[in-house]
Amino acid sequence: MVGFRPSPGRVALPLRRRLPRRAIPYWIATLLLALTTGLVADGLLHRAEDAEARWGTTRTVVVSTRALAPGDALAGATVVRQLPSVVVPHGALPALPEGAIALDPMGAGEVVTAARVGGPAAAAVSGRLPRDTRAVVIPLEAKGLPVRVGDRVDLLASGSGDPAFDGPSPAATSVPIAARALVVVVRSAALVVALDPTDAVAVAAALGQGPLVPALVSATG
Image 1 (cartoon, rainbow, N blue to C red):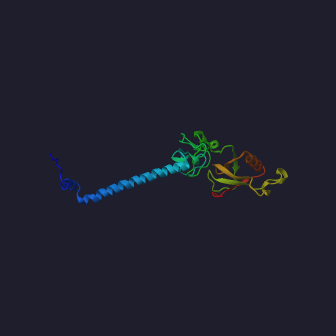
Image 2 (image 1 turned 135 degrees about the horizontal axis):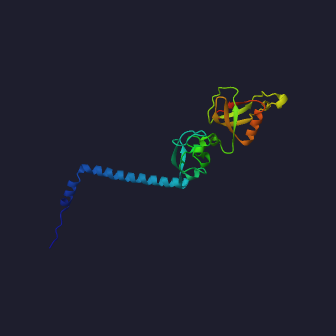
Image 3 (image 1 turned 120 degrees about the vertical axis):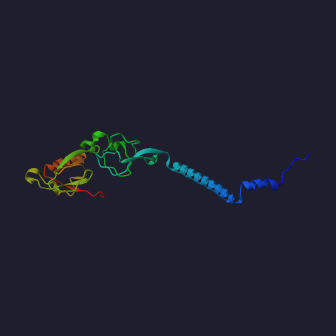
């Protein structure tokens, strides 16, 4: 008995009916799109692997979104980002502590470290002082200098003391008594500045001989 063998025409006819000729370009485009997507995904994966090979693993860190002055609250001024471990500084915070306050000036985009952050108590003047500094009050003889907290000032001797009692005037020196002192409090009659212990002693001695003149330092200087 001879088995039944359908002719090629009879087999192909249903296939042509199921797949009209005009649908063939659509399926070709679909296959090409799938192939292209796969190639792109594979390329991105290789790129990610290459980046990891170059930079290593990443870490979650807190980054400032704007410039911060000592005493500023960090809440609402930071974001959490993933950065390559090789560029993350020591002590970088993975999360922002509650009530965190900046102890030092910070720039926008700067990684926040534990050494530069204090708790709620840092909102007081002592919390605005950079580590190992002292706060010194500088009376203002002349008013009107446009100084804000976080600015830097040079402290210049005015030379108004009496040499007969106070000794030689420090105004004879060609350098400031203290350079780039950080302003932590601004009042109408005085500034409070942060100084390292050596400069604090020199400024106290200079104030004993006469008032000091604060000179605002350029932000780019």
